[in-house]
Amino acid sequence: MFLLATSPGARGGATVFETAKNTFPRMGAKLIAAFSLSSFYDNFEANSGISNPKLKEQFETELKKFTEDLS
Image (cartoon, rainbow, N blue to C red; front, top):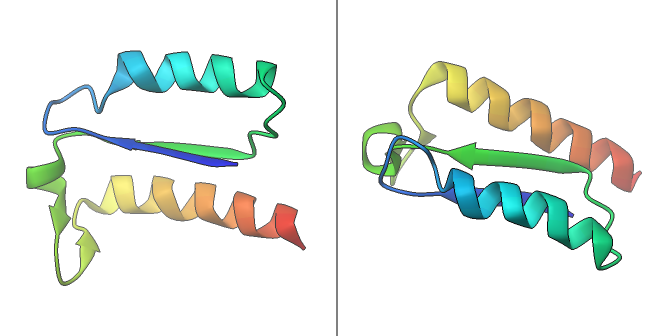
């Protein structure tokens, strides 16, 4: 599972995200990667995706971890 969260606020859905990260594995999910995008409207552009370089790098690291596990 690649768990993703986002919200318009600075916490990026942190409360629900942490709950999901703890709950899904107890329900049998294999949690491989997780990423939360905070301040969605400031850090995402429709045509180019994640606009914040640091967040984009974090996302790409998690995506790589996920895709490598699928191989």
